[in-house]
Length: 481
Image 1 (tube, rainbow, N blue to C red):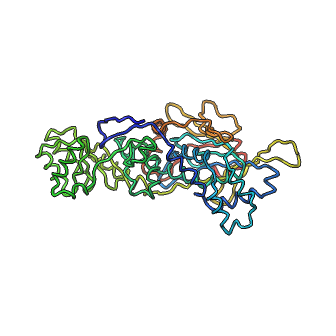
Image 2 (image 1 turned 45 degrees about the horizontal axis):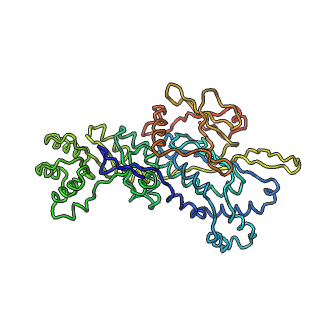
Image 3 (image 1 turned 90 degrees about the vertical axis):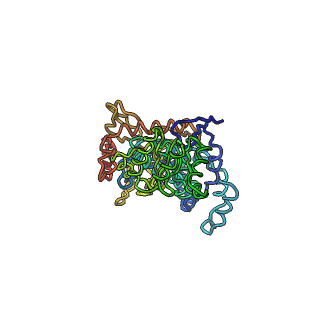
């Protein structure tokens, strides 16, 4: 069910619709083989391992980033909803299993392993920070505890989902901040790395603060407001520019007219002489500062003071900041390539590492699990042992510090625990918020950041993260601060 809403300031139309994710999540079952081959190889090895069979090994994995993308001082976590749905719906069909069995690497694998895949259902638990949470290096984004074969099989897709959407949400937060919180629309589907990436980039960008997207499927599947203007082809298809603008304006009186196909200022003058009073105009090329100033003057002198000016065309957070600092009278920004690919830093290197195992000790035979902390110590790829919790201290409406503790430690007084349980023993236990609630939460998270972490140019941020004494006593490879 959808509600049509006419919104002043929209590009053409805005639709707010009740979220219905059946279509997009119905495709999750096809993602079973959207993984690295070594995950399937390790799964077969885990299944046949007498060591793990005797000990009924439970793996505890955490996802985090060691280093932020260059010139970033935080990340905005996004993609949690898709991870939860992936975990709950992952299964293997006969076609997928037949393909695996056809691979040379599996020729000696016992048939029982493939029977196991046919019955596969996640039976473990998942903790995560809420979507929209601002985090720093070495802080767990999510934690998965499950029979080790199950936890291992999740790695590739979990990383792919969180890394990409968080990358785009973080980039969007920077761009929206640079725009002084004037409306920013995500316009980058045509530059995204494939149609699916375009849809998820729209979701990440909305979480990061954009007012909407040009991607219609993202509007349908996620309820994100959708916006559209017009392309130069519509102008070029007519014998003259004015006829094209007049026809478009007649059909879409609250639309934005594209005025830079030939000569921006001449187009504005043509409109005004023809007594067309556009709701909005879009400038997509040229000297955006000068053109926006001169366009504003022409519009105001003709009594069109309410006409909005939108600009687009390879915008970056730096160019937007410079335009506004120089007094450009721009009402909204449409950002494509730079946003939907995070072009300046197109990857987030989140990792998924084993931090502990729970095992039965055959020699004790008491039926109780022991927890063994695990830590990788190779140079520049150290990991930190044990399941952890992030305790956030907020005072005077500002983030003071995050304290990283072991899960079974007592949290500091007045701290907020960021990791929450979303899945327990294979069942969802935490309802997902709406996309609008996530965006609002993100905005509040960003407001809490110290001023130094909001800068567009960060050479070396000093992250407000400290370790508990007990974690320090475990001999961390290095202090995350």
